[in-house]
Length: 461
Image (tube, rainbow, N blue to C red; front, side, top):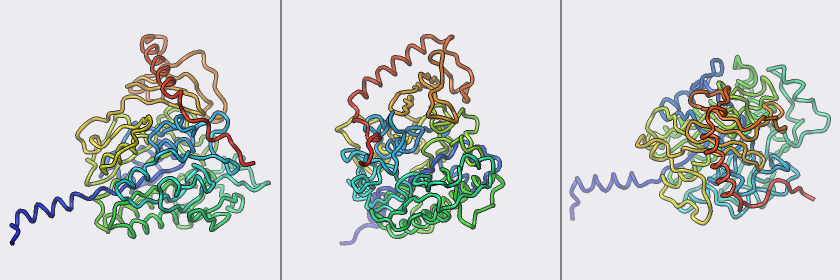
């Protein structure tokens, strides 16, 4: 029996449209809001990210889950504030090489959600959710892992030069031998110390290889760069290239890698089947001066709950799913799990409290962002809350030495739409708004009272 041409065309179109999208998350470390050309940097050249933003969506009010490494990553992968799974701690801010804990096995990650739809999954780069075998990516839904399991400044060799004392020199270049961090392939250490001179280049090359090898099935690629966390390293091709010094060199190498990845998607015919997200785990590390980045118009940086600590440069790209434009509504890395689940037709966890929103309609240009509030956690304490344009601070940390709590005379209120730099406290003139936000904080603290115990404080005996 002959099939009519119009029916054949319909069946073919339905078949082509039935493929679930690939997902790529490119996650930088300590990249500031003002470090990309498209976010206003005048000297760091980021043509690939600028083009990515032009072809996709630039989100101007997008938040990391936390202002420091480990909890930020936990929030992204689980769609939950890190307080819920014990991945923020008053005892230790992040996981260290002597830590015995990690992301609890009972947590459900983006990778595990996508496994419902038979995705292949990989993690490349910095993990920082537990380096012991029971906490590596393969125990959390990833088929493979290749990278450095924690921050690239850890395992420091005794007697090495003090990086802080060299921070005044924008071109100070460290020695890889001073940081004995391991490079892992799965659970096996394949290089120690990792050659960080080429680490960004190798991460990008492995990402490209992974895309090519898995082009015929849906995939999730989580590429978490070790840069631009200090110590700064860059391959020979980019050393001395940027007028911004070594920091600019490292950003421009990341941008080059983004260009490679997007070009590979185009070459393989995957551009309309893929959603790419570019973001950062927190704001810039201000203690390291020109070796740290810029928050642009935002106040403070990494480790603080000012906007410079958690509002991060974020771009969504995907010609088949993302309508080009600028989104000024709120979003967060916590929203990625719900968004990916929706786009893939998978189910997000229903047996626990989730904190993310589905942004897929906003990506399609069909609706404004559903997120209207955000809670700023830090070291297991709720420091601030945002509702619409209003942000109320209860606890603040010093911008440079963020391990220290700053003194406050009382709660401070800012209107972020009028005052992006959080320069003008208006608590005294808006007592009703202060009261409303204090009630929001109380409600959220009650809602997180059943959180898992601290996972970061325990050490290897």
